[in-house]
Image (cartoon, rainbow, N blue to C red):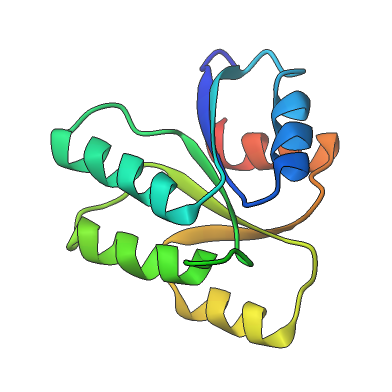
Length: 134
């Protein structure tokens, strides 16, 4: 892969963010990584970039269990911001469990493309990049 990717990590856990960032830095395809501890902050930055028509991240790793705003609320808000525009970023839901309610919520939304288990592993990232960016 010759294309370098920009990543957003939106997760309320410093430990998970550090681990994911450290893992992504091992790959040559990683261009930049921006982390957010609050979904509201990640949404604000993404909204700003959409409105200003500036470079969006290629990948957004989005935790679903966060205080204030969870991942599915983030997706609902983002859908309103997009207002029928197509999102060029690929959103991946991160979870430490595949609870039936979460799977059903994932299946109802149309923005996120995959459900990934935390912590991410090297082979999952390689597979995701091959599938969506090759």
